[in-house]
Image 1 (spheres, rainbow, N blue to C red):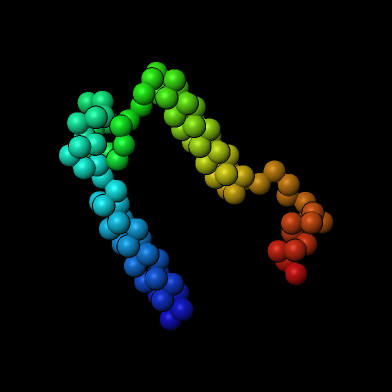
Image 2 (image 1 turned 135 degrees about the vertical axis):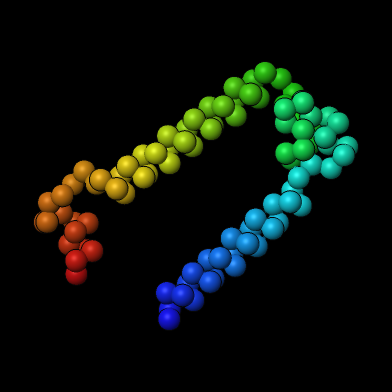
Length: 92
């Protein structure tokens, strides 16, 4: 029963988060100020120089690599010894 309650809470939370995303989309005034391929995504004037694209691209690369490393470490942890501190804590 608890498992179903957790899934219901998670579903309601995701519905709430996704439902509020539509209010973050750009208004008509912001759409006119943004470059063609970024129109309608968010509020604001958009990038002011080419360096903005470089910075955002680097942030995306770092974020994607961090997520990859996280999943890799969770799926296949490097330490498998039974006497390691992680296993002592998890098994007690």
